[in-house]
Structures are given as C-alpha cells and as structure tokens.
Image (cartoon, rainbow, N blue to C red; front, side):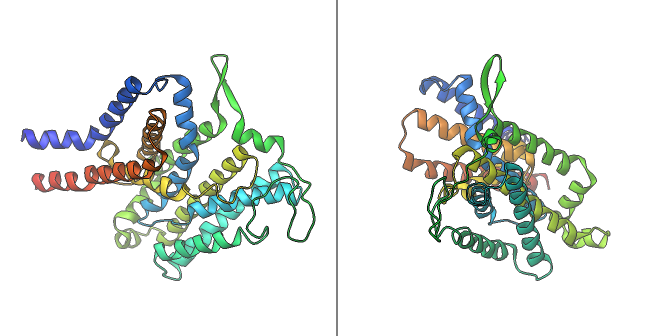
Length: 337
C-alpha cells in the first residue's frame, strides 16, 4: 500500500520536484543563474517554442499530431519579411497575412485528415515539405533583408516596421526596469487562453472526448470532423504567431532560423504529459514542459556545457518524462485493479 502511495506521489509530483531540484542545483553551481535577468532570459528562450507547443497540444487532445508547425512558423517568418521588405506593406497587413496563412494551412491539414482519410502524420509531413519548398521559391533560397537583390535584379527597399519589431524586441517595465519581453507576455497569454479553452469550456471537453473515444463522441452527437479541423487550425495559427515573433526579434527573414522549432515544441508538449501526473495533453503541462527545457538549457549554458550536448539532454529529459507518464502510471492503474 505504501509503495502504491509513493509511486502515485512520484507520478504526480515527481516532475515538479525534479524541476525544483534543477533550479537549486544551477543556483549553486552556475554563477548568475539565480537572478531575475536569468529568469527572464529563460522565459524569452522558450516563449516561441512554447507557443508552438501549445498548438501541438490541441492536436494531441483530439488524438492527432501536427508535424508541420516548424515549417508553418518559418513560412510566417519569411512571409512577414517578404510583405514588408519586398512588397513594402505595413506591419498590420504582414501580421494578418501570416495569421491567415497559418489558419489556411491548418484548415488544409484538417481536411486532408478528416475528409481524405490521410493519416495525420503523413498529411502534416507532406505539408511540412511543401512549405519548406514554397518558402524558398520567391527569393531562390536566400534570406530576406533590406537592400537585398531579388531574383529579377531589383533591390528590395522596404524595411521592417518599428511596430512590428516592437513585438519581438520591446520589454515591459517591471520595478522601474525593462525586464519582461513582449513575446513572454504573449506566450503567457496564449497559455492561459488555451488552458481555459481546453479545461473550462464545453468545446474543450468535447475535444478531449474525441481524443479518448472518437466513435463514442460521434455517437453522442459531437461534430468530430469540425473539432478536429479546429484543432489543426489552432495549431497553424499558433505556429504563425511564433514565426511572427521570431521575425520581429531577428529583424530579417532568416531561412534557417526555425530549424529546431519542431523538435523543441514537440518535446515540450510531450513532457507536459508528465506534469502533475496528467498522462494526457494539457496546456498547463506544456507550458511547464517548455519552461523546464529552458531551465535545463540555460543552466547548462551558464555552466559552459558544450552546445552539442543539448539535444542529448533534451532527449534524455523527454524519455524520463515519458517513463513517468506511461510506465509508472500503468503500474499504478494495474495495482489498483
């Protein structure tokens, strides 16, 4: 009995305790880690991948998966740069175009999956490759910046609007210091928004019902196809928001800047399964998962750990999180039966 209680405690609070121990460890052994500026940098480093991970979480809720989020984010980055630098459009037009693009990609993914019966991994993998190729065509694979020479020989005279750069670079005053970057505020806002939607609304509960038993949800009168399409549209829009923020931070359309977005966001979403023993996709767990990865990488960086060990560490953390989620929790369920 005591073993079962101990195991249940480990599943429910083990990951939170691990995060706390990591913070204590790095506070002692990484000079400068325990401070407000370090905390802000951690949040800033995970804000964009966290936003993408929240979109992935919505597709996981309906028992799907979106592999195209990284390419959607990079496409939004390139599209926003192209709109302002090449087409000389305003920041508002560029942002709206990116959000529309993300929604359309999500809609197409959803239609391929629910109407054409294409498996979600194959549909979103195909979309990923399509977008990777499409975003390179207008500039023949070059990054976009003011003064660049276009394929036709013209020079791009447009610039990134100040209002657009504000989204990625501005910091909000906190205790008379400019500490909190705008992307962090947007990440926290989207986290709360998606948490409320999934956990506190009828639509969110129906999406969880679809993920648990699609056939039963359909027999109960749930619009299964509509909710699945909605999940992929949310994923597309959040990915485009991540791409917009990345473009605003960089101030250029860097073709290679989104290379790690897919893996990092998927890792955060899957780590979220282990938070508080949820054993299911959830917005709170995803946000904590993204933060956990940020703490880990920031601490390793401040301890001068080699950069090439970071992917190994992220993989190890993901494996531990999945063990907490599935192996230990299944034993508890088996013991209770």
